[in-house]
Image (cartoon, rainbow, N blue to C red):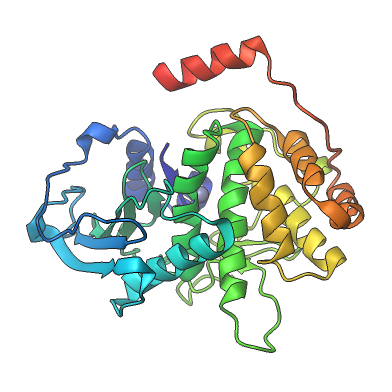
Length: 349
Ligand SMILES: [Zn+2]
């Protein structure tokens, strides 16, 4: 699965044909195309070791993990913090958050090495997880200022966990659920890092735009649009099922609006936090994470809502009210024989 932070409709609006074509292309890159050579500079992680490697794509589209391309290796034995570059620090904080809140040691829970590429392509307007490595463009500096933002790193890294834990199909409601899970973890880490006394922040990817764009960020969890701009238009994420956007299940349709309809689920999470009065990264995230682990490949919004209710304990009343706020009626989805066939076809074809 190849998951970008910027959906194609936003790229279209900034008329960035180059990044648009590339992001579509990336989704088709097969794992085999990543050149994985053993590099002696990269230590093999033992139990409870963290290894993060930052590579330079040298403004090409090549993702080559050869030693020459290594910018820095951050190696932590037994999770002892070390200092590293700003970019690796963002992934370090993400790793620590995953360990502390989700109990995951790396995305596979087996200390997989995080390989991160920067300076991908020229003026490339996106960041993505391609199923093997994390990739960051520099941004065109005209509209997109940077993708090196803490919650963007966490969003992409969570895609790796979601892929490992759930195998959610990346289209329609299950695809939007996948995007939502990444947004929730990103926003929770952002709030986790706030200083004492600061208010909860519900804007994802703050700082992504250059001053030319009238916007606070890429997405919000509240009813407020993230941007309302002459070039970009207005943030079109719905926050209620009555505004659900039906789009074709193809690249042009954002695979059925996976980056669009995720706004409904994001708003439900926000409503749950406010109704429960809990810190987003504590009980609410914990409920979500438990539900994610119960999630199956073709679960829709109602099925995910059902899963959250099952693990909500004494917060059940607040959670039911939050789902009601966005017009989702929790409903159990039974796994059918047809689902098994679909999963087989999805995996092997
Ligand atoms: Zn995403």
